[in-house]
Length: 429
Image (cartoon, rainbow, N blue to C red):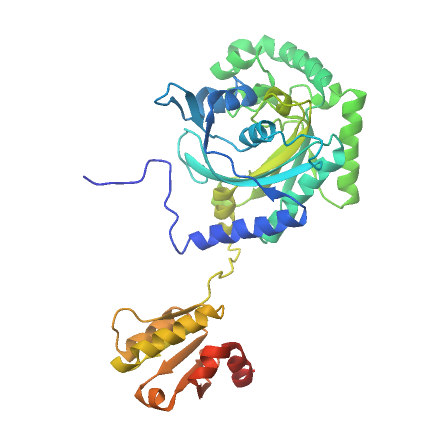
């Protein structure tokens, strides 16, 4: 029998995994500057955590969830996105209490699961990095989250993006807009896709998010939610745009942006990039917004939240497609070559001493001849090659060669073991 990974999943191998590590480490460092702390939630949750929060007309709930009954008869699902699980943890652990500093800021990273047709940048197991901040209704927090998302992409060397901005307003706004949208779409009911027909009276905003060509012709001329904003909703959105202007952040107000989940209100946004590696036109790699009802829906107090999610696979495809360099996170500082069987113990002692001192070091484990060991040092891009032969062993010396300059010196073995840093500085600087 031939064993293969499940369809829609990927093996992240050495040579590729360092790129993931770089992205995760960069995100962690940046989030720390903004005072966001890591939270880790289970990869599976009660089905209702997502069906209640994502909306029963969303594609995630109706088509894409990996849900099943476990051996105890519990209806569970592999998480299709990160926010709902974080909110569940926030409520269950009473992180909204008076002793908790607000806004309560967290970030997460890890695998998510959606059953859909695998394609480039969209697997059935995919990975997200995201942030959530709870406990502030101020539009300033919306702007911080947007600015942080853009800052993160900038850290990766991504310079040209499109920030598409919209608002879903407050409850009164959405009620008025919902009625206007139904009135507009109702005459075209027979021409809509089957999915949009089902969504029209339950959640007409889902029709705006449809990718079906049948629906797009009507969506283009649909009423804009910006014409139905209440004074409070308009004031919130105006503050967001004025702060973005103050920070010199470019954006496009795009009423067609509605997001694919039902829990959003007020500010929503998508950050898009353009690259042949992701297909024609702009592709969203990071998106999010505000959700003022989600905590309450999952049994917590009436407390707002705002956040974003970033797709790691799409980010990697874009960076590789645009030839954005990835730093080498694991350079080899020293390769120790032993010439002769009697040097085996000493090379081991040198390698371990270098590692104990904080250097990355390696040696031969395949009984290679000296020539093969030197080739290995070159292939591994070692910064220094350290050589011990019978002569060096007898005189308690070791040869240290800078691979960049070709310069080589002979130094006491003890000096290398005790302070390799000083040896380098004295010999090659």
